[in-house]
Image: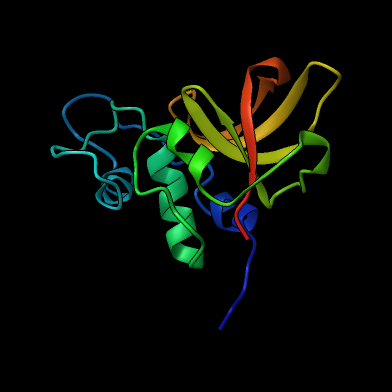
Length: 137
C-alpha cells in the first residue's frame, strides 16, 4: 500500500477547474457523488467540501459526507491554528474548507483547496475568518 499525505493527494489535482458552459468537470461531479448533495452535480455549485471528501476517500480518512464546508467542524479532532501541521490538517471557514498550507503573515494563511478561484489551487485566507482547525488522522 502506498501511503501519502492529504496535501500530496490534493496536489495531484492542482489546476483542476470548472468548465465554462453546459459541460462540467467529471472529477468534480464524481467528488459530489461522495456527498449527500442531490443530482445533478455541476461544477457551478460550491465544491470545496466535495473535493475534500474525495481526497479523504482516496486516503481512507474520515469524511463529512456533506457538500457543506461547515460540516467539517464535526470531523476529526479540534486543534488550535498554532498546532496545525502543514499539509495534514484542515481549515474550516463558514463557506469554505481546505488544507492548511502554511502561514503567510499575522493576518493570512495559505490554504490548498478546491473551488478556490474556480479551481484547485493554493490561496491566501484571512485568519480572522477561521471557524475551526481539524486534525483528521
